[in-house]
Image (cartoon, rainbow, N blue to C red; front, side, top):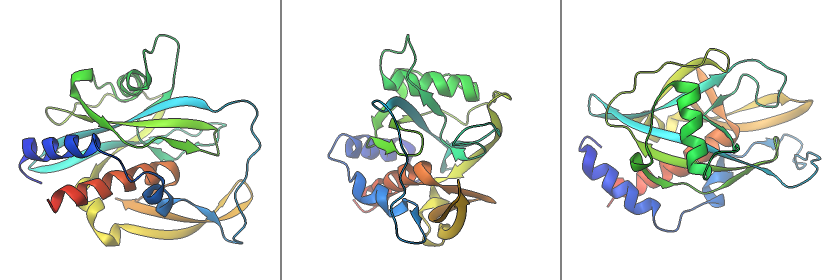
Amino acid sequence: MRNGSKFLERLARRLSQPLPGKGVQNQMRARRVSGAAISFKHEGPPREGGVALLLFQDGGEWYFPLIKRKQYPGIHSGQISLPGGKLEQGDKNLIDTALRESREELGVDISNQQVIGRLSELYIIASHFNVIPVVAALPSSPRIMADEREVDQVIMASVGHLLLKETRKEKDLLVRGYDIRAPYFEVGDQVVWGATAMIINEFITLVREINHE
């Protein structure tokens, strides 16, 4: 993946084609140890949100930033995620949402021209969100100025590392009283599971495809 422009061209072309979607997303879906379905009661239609996978090259290798969220009284407290959030008034669309949230959370300014495509929409049952993952390419390693109110830590995920089979693991978790068996990606000393792992799995699947072209 060292030839950056060719990699991005192939990735943009693949993102414009039909995506694998739920088939590969669900490979990383957590499930109850008992085998019963995980269910939440929600009222009204899902909220809309956007997240950003911000690719950049450093030393010939590709990376993208993940954030560890602060502890707060919410469903995703302390979890690892892509930068992003909910659609707000003033956002033209969910691409704008993803880029705005990236600016707010990471201090990284991204233009619409740097967007190379989108991954499959994902419904996050725990928080009742429909999320669109946006893929953008940065010209260089970003200068991160994280929002200390929202971001506890920024983790740079290596695409090459995520491609290794041994990076994908599984563990049991206790989440809101449920015994959960969760597939996850090991990124440094962090456990990346849930919706973020489902999004990353589709991205990594596409990277494997274009690497074999």
